[in-house]
Image 1 (cartoon, rainbow, N blue to C red):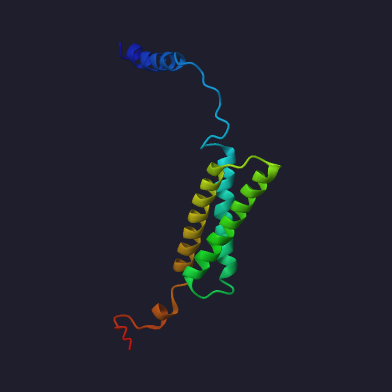
Image 2: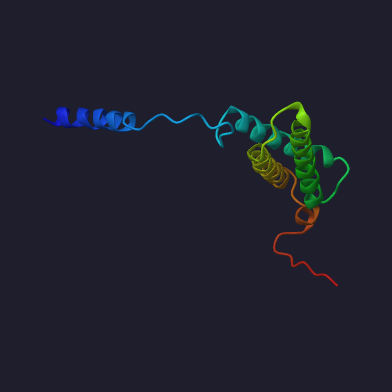
Length: 133
């Protein structure tokens, strides 16, 4: 008896889903291979930009700005190139570029904090108070 009711649930679910008419595919869906590429490439560019900027910039916020700016500049350039007639411009693509740049910058910053703590934290003896004038 339990087997019969366990099998009826998937059968009813399939019949329920088949009852709805098929819809035409959306020309620019939010989810798909194209969006995953925008996200992952932007994340890599942001992290790489952060890493490269660490050679010339001392402050973490400057590195984060440089990495995110590098990634977003390339993402926006790609969309402008598409808008010039060389592809299909998409606000959804750029939204995924922004999300990827944010994640890539955050991961690079996290690695920086874990691998290279601030010099003032390294040289100060434990328990010592920081006095500034």
